[in-house]
Image (cartoon, rainbow, N blue to C red; front, side, top):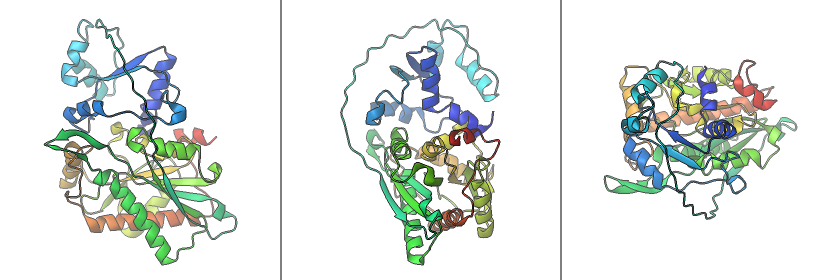
Length: 366
C-alpha cells in the first residue's frame, strides 16, 4: 500500500469511523517501537493534557468512541495474556508488512470515565497579498503554519515549558519572513497569496480544519496549500524532502524551484511515520486542495540522518525544543527563498495545480 494512502487510513478520523461502524466502543493502541518518535515517558505524560474538539464536533468528528487507551509496549504481553499471541509476534509481522493476526482477548477492561468540559477561544490569523490578475486574482495559494504548541506539561528534567521552537515557531517565523519578502520586493503575483497561521494543530488540526470548512474566501478558489511544520533546519539544505511529491502537479513545481536553487528533492523516506496526514496540509487535502509539506532531507548513514532522528528522540514534543538548540540560520533563509519562489510560481501559472490521475487523494476534489 502506498505510504500516503496508508497514512490516510491510519489517521485518527478514519480509524474511529471504521471502528465505530464495526460497533466498537473504544480503542487500545500499542505503539510500535520501530516507528515511535518519542520515548514512552513523554507519551505517558501526555495523558494529563486535555483534549480539544471544535464546538460543533464534540463527539470527535462523528465517531462515537468512549474510550482511548495507549499501552506501553513492554507491558503489552500482560494485556495479550491467554490469547495465544505475543506482542513480539505482532510487531515482527507489522515490520515485515505481513497481515496481522486477528483474535479475541482473554483480558477484559473495565473503564469509568469522568469528564469535565469547558470552552476556550483560540484564533486563526490570515493575511492576503492580492493578486494582480483580474480573473486569477480571485484564486488563492495558501501558505500555512501552526502557531500553537503543547504549552505547560509534565516536567522533564525539571522543565515543564514545552516551547515548540521548531514545532512550529520555525514555520510561523518563515511565514512572516516570506510575507515580508514578497511585500518588500513589490511582487505582483497573478493569483492572491493567503498567509495563514492556524491554531490547534497539536489538538487534531483543529484550526486548519475549521478554516478549510469555513474559509474566509470562496472554498473553490483555494488552489494549493504549502504547509510549513517543523521543517527542521538543523544542517545545510542539500536535500529537501517533500511529502505529497507524487500526488499532484505541485511535485513538478517544487522540483523546478529546487533545481534552480541547487537543492535535490526527495520523497518521504519514512512513510510509516504517516507525516503526510499529521499536519495542517491534510485539512486542505480532505477538501480537494493539492498540498505539499516539507522537511530538510538527508542521505542514509550520514550525520544528517543521525541529527534528524536524534531531534525526534530528544526534543520532539518535549521542553528541549527551545531556542537554545542548534539551527542553521542560513539554510533556513534558503528554505524561505525556495518557498517564496514556489508560491509565486504556482500563483503565476496559467493552470491551477491538479491531482495526478492515480492519486488516491484526487477523490476528495470530485
